[in-house]
Image (cartoon, rainbow, N blue to C red; front, side):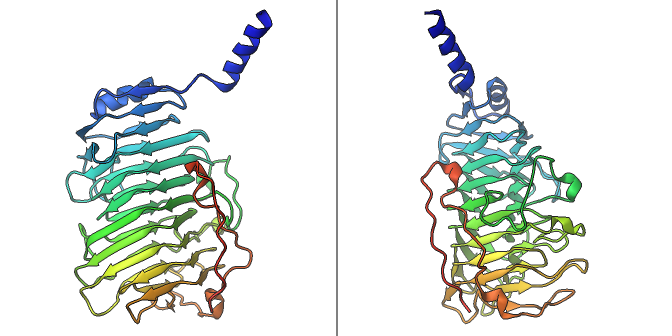
Length: 387
């Protein structure tokens, strides 16, 4: 009997106590913070039906789940205001280990309708990480989801008229990379990405200025991210010159002055862009790739006046894009093509050779759906090269 009890206790200690659900008394900042303070690793903080206005962020350092009661029922408005780059989020996720941190089933909105606040910021202190954001709605933010460097997935979310929907901040320099992080160059085929998949991005007032939906996404410093199986609905009310995805040169896609960080770049594949246009020309760019190593854009479809792809070295200290490929992108309803590439507008315009239009032979695709979703993944065959 004694041996049996000891074994039972050993098993309990080995696998940990059963995860608990802590019910927040309301959706208020104070009640949600109180529930989080009571939670332990693996627990779920359940938010009830309700609408609350927050005037500060909650900094989340525990590997727990924040679960709303559905986007129609649990709503949090961010009442803070700040200039761009200094915004306050609703949740500031700061993972300190490689266990799951999740936010799900909540509507977030900038209450001031002035894009002066953020939805969720992610700033890990350790890599790799397991961040999951799912089944949420983000409306009217400066940065809807701003990811510093975390790995994970944002899926089945809806983004409405945000200034920047997917902000990928990245590493400022090698000193900012946690010692636990090891990367390959490029990181194709690994899970060293933050993945946006099966999301819907709505821009119903795209006009090229504040409060009009500027960027689908941008990249500041080197950061691996992936956009796949998403839908973009864009209704332009004016000719605009903003970019779909803006990838900074010495900061973005992805060549900083410290070229040891050269192995970071986005992968954008199997998405659908639906443009409703009121102008007769296509001034916008689908992608503005200003440097870096390993950008891939393939199997995307578009309708309407989507704009093209621009490749350049900008600013001047950037390198021209390396290992950058585009293939099997199709478009209907416009003479403009998401497969057309220009080299204009940069400090150093590259020679546009046909290698940009071939599939990279050594590339392998990350399984879809993302492994964190708990769905059996499928490896989809890649399309043949398009010349």
